[in-house]
Length: 305
Image (tube, rainbow, N blue to C red; front, side, top):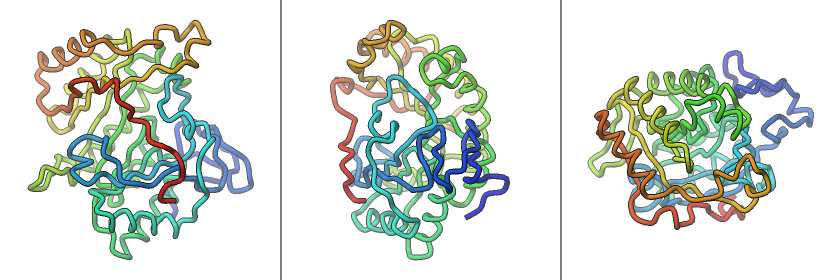
């Protein structure tokens, strides 16, 4: 499937535009070559309630990533250490099997560096009976022209908005231009989906959910993200404000990341939620109780692949 002005060979699928020839064996900034690598395809209960529902979201975790988030929860697959090679027809087959298992949707997790192949697989699966919504679950660091090409293919965008501070984007994800890229990508996502649509059971059928993971010590950044999204899109976009940040031992090795070596406090999270309420946010998901103590990291063991 071809996207206008978008190519894998040389590759310009993501904002990095590393222009390597992946089909000839070269690996891009995402660490991926020509093969489509998938680390897990299974029902997943840990998304927002309108995405997971009672039976789970049909998540397909792609290997590789175009960001270098030092705190990444899915580090093993982001770094290309897990994953099985699949073809486009096999990917379409995986989607249909997840639908047969009762999945509420097909949830493409970090698909940007495989976006043309993933889109082709979706269209092939639709020809063979795929009828549930398709979710694009990305980092927010996406090219707007790529998002534009997903009109008619993707129904829901479940997107991160990590930073409004360029310095934080550079420091923690090696992406100084993250805020500007995320803004134009989000604009295109909202244009494609329009007003959010839910069924009688409260499951999202169409729309945009913007996730923000609160990092310890970075309430100012979180509030800036919330302010921007709400003032720009109002109730057209749902916010998901998360407190599930998990510190990893590897962060202690670098003094620049010592501030990330703890969990988010209840006071920090409460302060951010109160701010959202104060500025008028109504459509938002929040995490209650001891969610930060739970594991939201699945086993990337090739299940369903």
